Length: 423
Ligand SMILES: *Cc1c(COP(=O)(O)O)cnc(C)c1O
Ligand SMILES: [Zn+2]
Picture 1 (cartoon, rainbow, N blue to C red):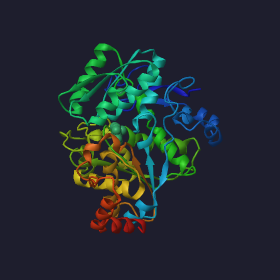
Picture 2: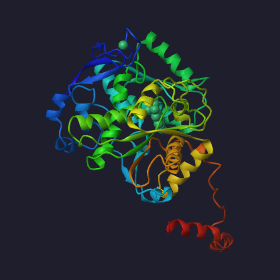
Picture 3: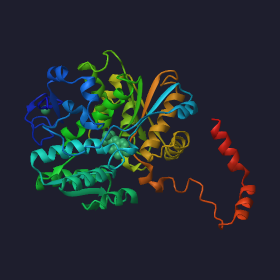
């Protein structure tokens, strides 16, 4: 089934076999999966895709897995929400939210990449899977490992939100909290991967893992009726999803599933408290200077992004741009999305909304063109971020008279509701 021909070094082009390898022995460049696009072009059609179940595996010719998929059978194919009330609020004509806050089974975009990585781990015969994570990846690896019956070790910074910590622990992995930043966790995990020989989904299985992120882009094109958006705003942490969305759009044109010659401007969104990629974009630098993160957007707080360089390249090649949002703007972004579209996202999503708003205000994104914003995680996991921002419940006894009194004291409640109804 698979059209994978091997791995190749993204920098020097050296070829490698399909194996749990991730860096080039010669130049230390990252390895990437290579496909036989001519054969895919012959076999993969819109009709064959649409005849398959609504999951990431409907695009399996363009994923690096052999045989029938065994894991992640319900992951992906999340809603592309036509966001008219948010569009009105931002003053734009055509806006969509690609909503991975409801991805199966752990409510973030990570269920895509993990489904592919763990399928590959099973193929390679690993019995233990692992990851270095800012939270969502740990949730997804823990859940998929449980369903696959694999042993699981996860490594996280010790200061993560409760929802992210419990949201892994419930699946029964061994959790190791590290006193330090994600970048410290990641460095340690590279050493552990070498010594223990486990399948670290985002380290030694990284070439396969990252390919799963393409499905986010494939779905957007299919859900738009096999058309590409003119602008897309993507959050950046380690730098996996943004270049892979670009690659997804290229592949669809290359194999003829969407018309060629459509150009998509891609924009990166980061938190101001951890914006190494945005800083490089704004200063015109070619390399990324690592930073020490300090933001409420913990899931995207990666100070030394593994694929940051490829984010820069994809953004620049597309003619796009990027911006950073302060923690205050991030919270406003979370509220705006919730109150216009009824979607509760975590700070990473608030960042994307806030950055989209800035780019529109700056005139970088024209108001009359089609825009997709990438919502990659769920707000119910990060209640801490907004618990002091929202109004607490009004407390009364269960008596109609008490409600009547309360209602009379709160005319502003009705006024707010009316204003929001009429937009
Ligand atoms: C991991 C993550 C991202 C993006 O991460 P990349 O490493 O850049 O792909 C975005 N949003 C959320 C909620 C995440 O968990
Ligand atoms: Zn190389």
